[in-house]
Length: 316
Image (cartoon, rainbow, N blue to C red; front, top):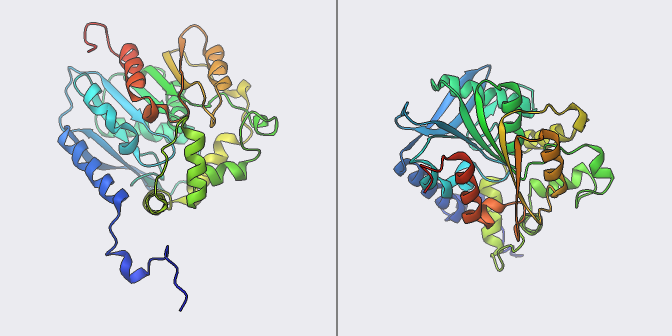
């Protein structure tokens, strides 16, 4: 009988230990221990948004919304920031549609729709007054759209490695490491160990070495197999007919953070965005960092966030 060492029979799947699933559970315990609670809000129209919200919203604190990018769910991207920001903010950490436990039956895949859903989410949770927001990569597309659509509700904006100024023609003109949409989808939604390793090389200046293939395969199984069709449509939507001339200009004070060696959204897009917004924007470039700079350079990332978001009298 031929044996396939990487194959796990269906009847044994339930018994297999999953390092990634266990890590995800640890993140859940940590978020709950930190003072947040997991909740799913029904926004109507078949739209459910899961998020981590304060167990007790304190009116004396400002509100900060943390919006994740592609990859794992919100916990994996923002777990290290909780201890730095919770003393100062009411934190809201949602899973965007088709990530984690969030989903919709609506056909709209635009960042504008995601932004409207997040604003509705804040209303459902009774958040009044202005909110500030942080958006990483795709989350920055959504956050930028929130700032443009709801200027009276969004105060300060941080976008990190967010190619919101890209144009569809950039793919064909060689700005990106990939030449077409199909290749971009295969890398951003990896379904093989080889493609996940490629994504790691593109996301980090110094990607982790020697990660066993079974760990990467486990990550794909747990984190990268749900809502593939819908996530593909999200990627298609951000590229479709995109022109810089159509991008609204936001007026909020904006911090743009970029990895100097970002190979997903090259630094040129950061300079473009700074020019597009103008005097209300500050561009910070972190050296020896790639696209996943929040994970690769967490201390520098946190330092710049706190300097921008917090008053000097409260920053620690």
